[in-house]
Image 1 (tube, rainbow, N blue to C red):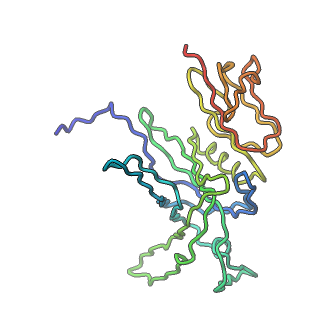
Image 2: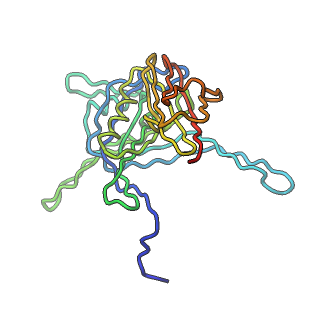
Image 3: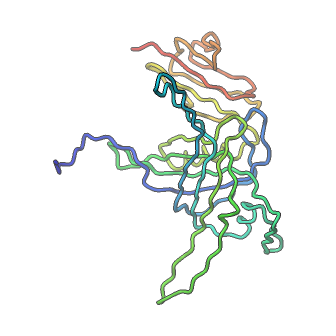
Length: 275
């Protein structure tokens, strides 16, 4: 086995977790993403662990598995942060908070909400990280995991108790359960997350580029409902599909495509001729 470091190996790995936020869901449009209320800063992030469950179907024939299908059912997310605040805890678990007192009742139910966080990512060729933003669209805190512990300080040392909350993750009405995108700076990642959390109603526009071309804004962008979504391509694509509809003729000679008064998600595919 060689001990020589191979500098040609590619890597792209998360190196931690920064910042996290929770926000209540105040309404759910029938064909759109949830609308969120006030954003709660969960403090410095320490840990985020996501696992999920799928339903499995195996189609068998001729003594073999012809097709294996897995469909997302729900997930479990554990978020550990430095924010152990009674008022925020009451919001997470559906308790009441009045005049500085948290009231926990046996009939309390955890309300649905959203949760988002940022991960620094190191990749090949750079010592400067990029930042991956993750938004879990619909989840509830698990009451069975609400815990409180206290320990005697020993030997003059203090062991802090961090706030660990376990959530169950579900799909929202569009069938989506998570959104992720990577950015050059942490500020851009936070702005993207806050755009999703803070919009009274918004619709995603995602663009896939095939060939030698680009678009601004790239990736997935959320536009407020009723406003125009303007996308500027580096040149007019050879073909542009908006869903299954050919919209090539709607692109201006300068490469601008406009969705007027957006009221639904849009998935675009732009095909450019190879140079």
